[in-house]
Image (cartoon, rainbow, N blue to C red; front, side, top):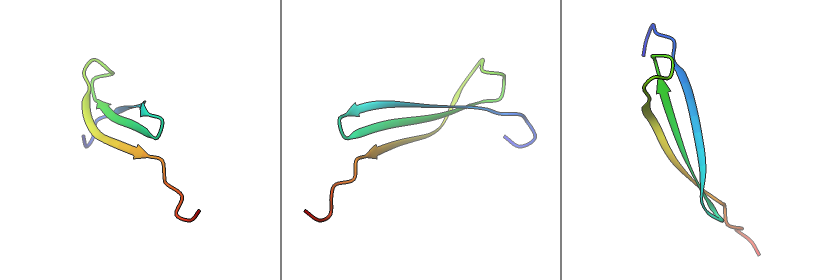
Length: 50
C-alpha cells in the first residue's frame, strides 16, 4: 500500500499444545476494514537428539 499509512494487527491462537496459528492483517482506513496479509503455522521443534 505505497504512499498510505497502514495499520497492522497480528493475532496468534493456540491450535494444540505444540502449534500456534498466526494471522497478520492490514488496514489502510484506520481499522474500518482489514485485509489478510499472511497466515502462518508455527510448530514446536522436536528434539533432534535424545
